[in-house]
Image 1 (cartoon, rainbow, N blue to C red):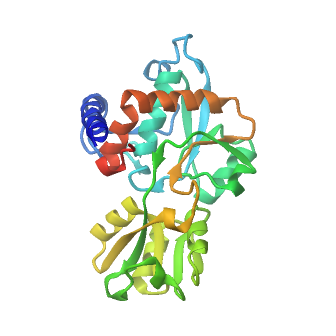
Image 2 (cartoon, helix red, strand yellow):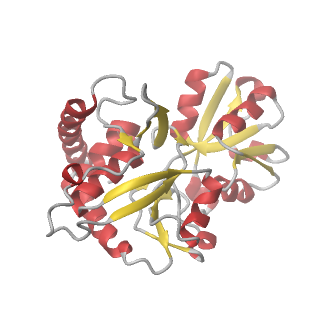
Image 3 (cartoon, helix red, strand yellow):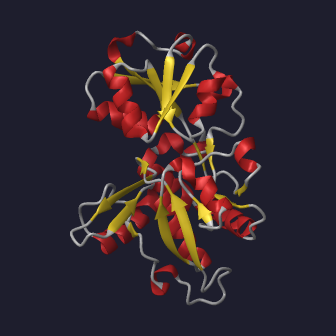
Length: 291
């Protein structure tokens, strides 16, 4: 308990530092005051620290693939000049890694189902997009160590009477195409899987009653229910479903990428010095800080 409390205190202090830095750089109007927005253009060498030749990836420009429709993790808006601006937990982690390792990056936004293919085709150097390790994906790409633990929610209409996983048997359950939530639904006995392109489409199917429920991240469920009357959600015990590593998020790389150990070391350092907890807390809250 004391260890957990200490980590939360450290996270709050780190969040304050990150927040001050972000406010100095991006002004008002951001989704979260503790997070600076990242442009789709490559980050400047000065900002990323790539001029420091002592950093392991100094001078390298990486292409980062993501699907910017996962609230709190990665979203995109367009500013007055038509520039795409990305925000979220994954963006903050990416920005910190670029500074610590010395690389610049360009973001390539695409449907989630296309992310693994982009690595296989050599169109991206890495994927950071709320992606979980699965055995099927691991046949085609390599993964970093987990950087955050996920919580999974089940979105339903308030009048559905569905309050547990057991009650999903015989029901049509939806999720975004290509996500690990497909695997979760298939683990729930008696369900019929329905997939759609993006969370907005999935939510609409629940609202109009063409599906009985939807599986997505608990944070997304919370946001959706705040924005749509008549919807509610409950947390799924993923351990009870024997999902393995489907309840963690990892960075993906092409098979055999030399970047994996470099990023793993940097992620470990972020966890050790409190940076990771601060970023996670600023977007998801203290409940997501790992003990």
